[in-house]
Image 1 (cartoon, helix red, strand yellow):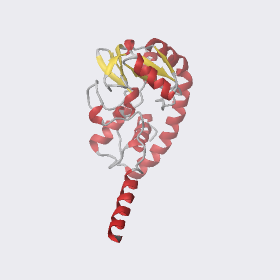
Image 2: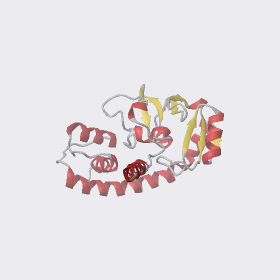
Image 3: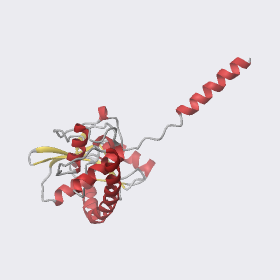
Image 4: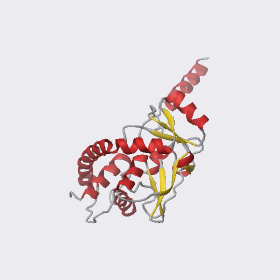
Amino acid sequence: MRFLQILLLLFLVNLGAKNLTMPKDFRMVPIKEAQILQEGENKLFCPRCGMTLPMFYRTNHAAKVDGKWEQYCSIYCLVDTMNMGKEPKEIKVVDNTTLKFIDAGSAFYVVGSKKPATMSKTSFYAFGTKEAADKFANENGGKVMSFNEALEIAKKEFEADKKAVAARQAKMAKMGKMVYNKMCQKIDEKFNSVAQAKSYIIKNKSCPNLKGKELQAVAIYLYKGEK
């Protein structure tokens, strides 16, 4: 009898341990489930901010710029591209039901839900059907609208979001400097983007075992050229 009680106790402890795992960020999907439309050695990273695309996949957008696909972590980075004088074409967004890219013009956006935003104060999630968007909004808040309506909000809030992003990146750069001096080999390269810096670090194993937030911080630090 006591042996069975011990077995039951071990089972409950093991079950509890399994349930104590950290919650996954809603925006994240396994890399094998993420559609990556852009090409090249930097393809896993947003060309504007350097964020790892599968980590923020549910808010990903993509467009053809100068004839090539660019994939962004967010609508904020899409607007950033527009503000650079570029003309994104064939704009797509991830359908949060199928996790596949769909035409942004036909998507239904839920704007301002309680789910986490990416690069902006306001959250933007897209769906292929109005029914799915309505269900998401009923469960998580936010307003259902078209791509053009969502884009206008993103454009209107861009400057305020840009200031907040700059402040966060300044803090990240300071953190990156400390991590770089502690964990990385000397890097003399100059980089044109955070994405390029991240790819270089990974490819050359310049900072062994570095990933996630620390990798992003070092890449921002290197990109800013403040070594």
